[in-house]
Image 1: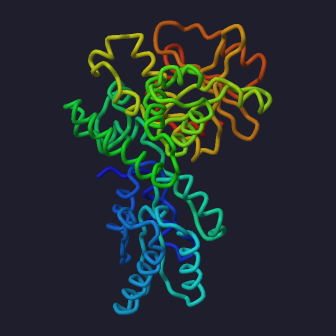
Image 2 (image 1 turned 45 degrees about the horizontal axis):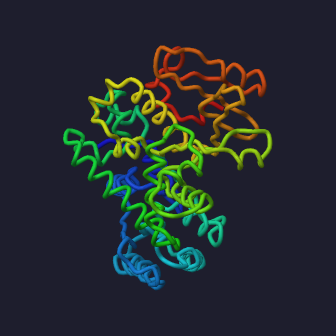
Image 3 (image 1 turned 180 degrees about the vertical axis):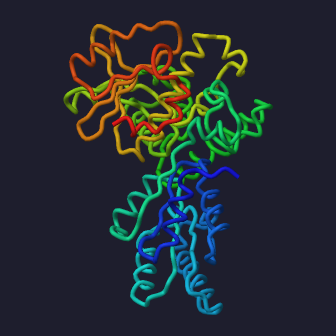
Length: 395
């Protein structure tokens, strides 16, 4: 079975003396549970595993019960150490305070329980970690798979990766696009919206949230104002509501709105967003064309190509600690993606066809002196190369 790079990291940390809680985080269906299963199957340390997926959020005693089960195994079996795995931990109200209490009790009593926490809601995990567990944890952030991983694990070519995206669980279904579409819709989209957004946030208009998601996915890689979005929706709402919903969808790792890069924050916030999915499957699941038809429609394929590059960039942004923007001046010159980290800029222009003109990139370099101005596609770095690298390595 294919092992992602995170395997070596988690395995190494669990072999060390008990020091930190290991928090494995990332969007749904990127392999968090598989990673932990692979490590536990090869490491010579007993473990117990529990999932909060179907536990009522108000059952605050659940964490203590899981911890007591681990302690009982440790004592009854006379074990020197044990690993406790708690999956979807963010679903339990007050989880961070409960984890802090149990972890600190074990530390005081010299109880050798090593802990792995897993979760798919980055925002809820981050809040809990910052509130109660400072100094007690390490993150392992899992982004969506890149092209080199899919090529090695499944033998995919770049065109299939661009169209079907990077969900490994959907790979066996690509021969039947209807089944593939149902899997993406049910196991990823519905699960994320229903379990990671609606359960934790009071949404006045769930139907409007769904419309915001679908329209934003359809326009992935393109600019679309909130006012124009509102004009294409059936449900009543306002631009502030739609903007808030898009922010929630971004926090859940589905689709985000990239703002225009500028020298001041006010102009950034006031800009028209460029919509961007975190995984291209979220765009093509709503595509009006099959893989074969999309590939022969070069204009539409160009949009899929740019969306795939953008998905790769934004899905690695959190782990890479960089921000993502786009740039356009009043003359229409543009740069598709601008990456910013610690005051340094990387400008990226995407070229999917024979049009090699890049006056926008040249103008951006002239005005703002980025660390790098990169063309991805025709006349520059190939899509295979770019989609196989971690964008943070460009800095």
